[in-house]
Each structure stands twice: as structure tokens, then as C-alpha cells.
Image 1: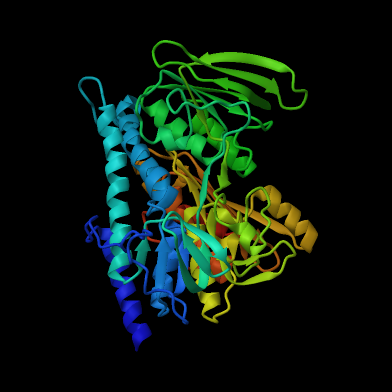
Image 2: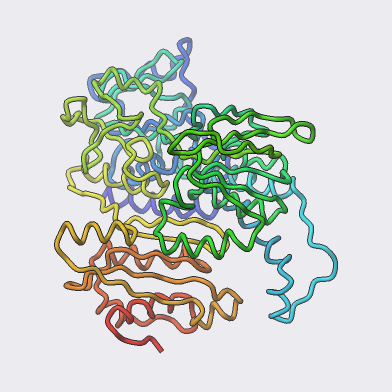
Amino acid sequence: ASQAFAHRAMLSAFSAALSGAYLPSVHLAPRATAGRGALSGLRMAEPDFDLVIVGCGVGGHGAALHAVSRGLKVAVCAGEDVGGTCVNRGCVPSKALLAASGRVRDMQNDKHLAAMGVKLEGAVTYDRQGVADHANNLASRVQGNLRGSLTALGVTVFEEKGSLAGPTSIELVGAGKTIEAKNVILATGSVPFVPPGVETDGKTVFTSDEALKLEWVPDWIAIIGSGYIGLEFSDVYTALGSEVTFIEAMPKMMPFFDRQIAQLADRILIRPRAIDSYTNVFASEVTPGIPGERPATVKMIDANTKEHVETIEVDAVMVCTGRKPFSEGLGLENVNVETNRGFVPVDDKMRALDKDGNVIDGLWCIGDLNGKMMLAHAASAQGISAVENMCGHEHVLNHDAVPAACFTHPEIAMVGPTEEQAKERAEKEGWEMGIAQGNFKANSKALAEGEGEGIAKVIFRKDTFEVVAVHIIGIHAADLIQECANAIQHGTTLQELSMTVHTHPTLCEVLDEAFKAGLGRSAH
């Protein structure tokens, strides 16, 4: 009964967090200080908590909520960063910038509007500070909602950072206090990776952390790296009037996307816009400038020969070369953990492993810190999985069923391996791969929106008709991918999917077309 009550409370609080019912002002645990008795009564024979979570991003928050639903007494060490990267410096504010700049792009597209009989008089303008405020206000609101959802469920929130004194002992950094738990989850996330030779100043050479503040819109910006973050910010900057130059170390742009999708993205998102690119080069030296006075410089060398290729002068440089785990100061040396490039090794159940590969009882690690899949919702799913396992309910997360999205206009979304990876897997495991495709240009809803560009590609096993992967580029791809993730998670076959009724006229009929095509059928 207590678990049922806790579960109902968790659902109510989580729903309220999403709707904004909780105000940002919440009651947190008193900041522990050596001179105060905030934790004087916590040292006792029994652990202070069933679970302590170090880090309070999306992963830590998801784990905390699920732990409460399982009846656990939970605390989090927030490190004065409730919401983590996603809420404060990543997913959430970047979507606000993309939404605002996307409106500007749409209203500046005279041809698109004219096709619908819409005409705008005068120039379309935007208020840079207003756009920046939209992103900042959204991040603040969501952070407050997350705080409220935790305290409403009785989760103790310590503002201090946590460091391991032992596998299940957490020192509250700077407070001179240690708390004990039955289990500890490390969920400290990641920070932007800045390569050697790149000097950042936060103004003319910066990472996504600074870019999200939108303190200025440079006329010409170089973006180092053409992954998710680089592509999204190229979308923002070009919509707001910037020219963009990509600098990519791999031989092709968007190297980690499915090859066919990357080729389509190049045609739809790159070529029609004020974007050019260098590929197969390293930005070996990047020197900041002064906004409006002196340009930033980027020296490029060949990725293979290391010979100088070219040096360009631009107004600003954004470094989008990936992220690295935030594992410094966690006290990992105290529990015999040896990181690999900063990542904490774990098994399939998210249990942390020592340097000999042995499970460390009571210590778990999720999210970007373990490097299995560096996505916010993957971190949350791993946190839930870890809680299930510590409660005795065996669970292994299927990372092939975790979707991902790039929120450009139009969007790119995927779940499962790329076509190239799936082909290797098929050859290794001895099954034949099939590919089917649906087209946005044949979809009534997409055409009504004037958004007929894009495809949905379904990769499947020809022997069982199980869905292996799906890759989409097109309007609202990020929303469409969920049906495909569900299919992979639950083993739904093309036969079953093709007999599932899809609402007409909707964008999801693009998937219906692809599912039926895999069986040699036509959708309409």
C-alpha cells in the first residue's frame, strides 16, 4: 500500500512538474556547514538513505522519481545545478532558440508563404535579447519545476556536490559532512570537450554553454564539428542572418548519421543556406578576437598529412567537438575505479566496476558519465533501470530502442543502428537485411504544410520482419520516431505494424507507407 501511495504521489508530482504547477521557490535541505548541525543526527547504525544520487540532471531526476515510486528514501547532491546540462545549458534552452529562430525562418520564406496565399508587408525582424530571454526563462521555469517535483515527493536535496568517501559513503564537498546510503548512483553528466590548440574566451570562441546565452549574432561564424549540436546551431544562426562555415575532421559532413540521411540533410539543410564547409581538416589553432574589432582566426591542417590547409578569419567560432564525462572530484580513486577517457565502467545493469572488472556493491553509474549513450533521456532510462536492479527486479536497458533526434528545420531522428552498422551486424549474425522507405512528398499532411521534403527509412530483418532501425528526415521527425522506438523495444513486426491503423491525414502515414513497403504492399 505504501508503494502504491508513493507511486501515485510520484505520478502527480511529475505531472505537475511538466505543467509548471510547482513554483521555483521550494524547501531544500539546509546547506551543510561544519558549524551547523544540519546533518548532526544522520550518523547512525542504519544508512541515512536508501539511495543517494550524485548529480541532479535529467538522469538523476528520473532515477530519484522512480526510486520514490519503489518506496525508497532518496537524497540527491545537486551541486547547485538542478536540471544539469539538459535543462540549464543544453536540450531545453536550445529548443527555445530553435523555436524562435524557426519562426523567423518561416516568415522570411516568401515563396513558402505565397504558396499558401500568405503575404507579409515589410521586413521580418527579431529582438536578439528577446530571443535569448525566451531560452533563459524556459530553462529557469523547467529547473524550478524539477526542484518542486523532487521536494513534493520528499526527496532530500543537498546543494553541495557529492564525492565518494566509499562505495556508499558520500562526502558533501565543502561541508565537512558525510552521509551514508544503501546505494549510490553517480549521475554527474558531461561538459563540452575543447580540443588542444583551441583557445576559448566565451565571447568570440565558445562552446554551446555560451552560445545558448545568444549574447550576439555574428555575421560569420565557424562551427567546428557537424554533429547534433553543430547542426542545430547552424540552423539557429542562419535563420538569424549569420553565414556559417563548418570545419569537420572526418572526410564527410555529418559522419555519424546514416549515410543516406546525411546526404539528404546536406541537400535540404546545408546547400540552400548560407553555409559552406571544410572536411577532413583539423582546427589546429583557434585564437579569439574582439567582437566588432578583431576577427577570430582558425588555422586548419589536413587530417591525414597534418600539413597546413588554410587559415580563415571569422567573427566567431563555436566549438562543437563533442562532450567529455564530468568525473573529476568524484573520489573514484577511493573506490578503486579506473576510468577510460574519463568514463566510469559499468555492466549492463549500470553497476559500477572496479579496475579489475568486478562489480562494486551498492555503486551505480548512469548517463554521460558511463558513456554508453550520451543522451538525456537515455540517462533517465538508465537511472530507472539501475533502481529496478537495486530493488531486485532484474532489468537490462535495450539501447537499440532508445531514439535520438536533431531538432533542425526539418528535423532528423533515428533509432537503432545506421544502415552501414546494420549491414555489418547482419553479416556477422547471419541474417538478411531489408530496407523500406516512405516519402513525405507523398503525404497529404506534409504537402499541406508545404514540407514535402524528406523520407522515413525502415531497416528490418527479412527472416522475421523485426524492425532493426528507423531513420527519418522531415517535418516533425522527432515526434514520429517514437512509434518506431516502441516497435523495436517490444519486438513488433512489419506484419503487425502494417495492420495498425494510422490516422488520416497525418504525418505518421509516412511510416505506414514504409511498413507496408517492407512487405511489398502499397499504403494508398
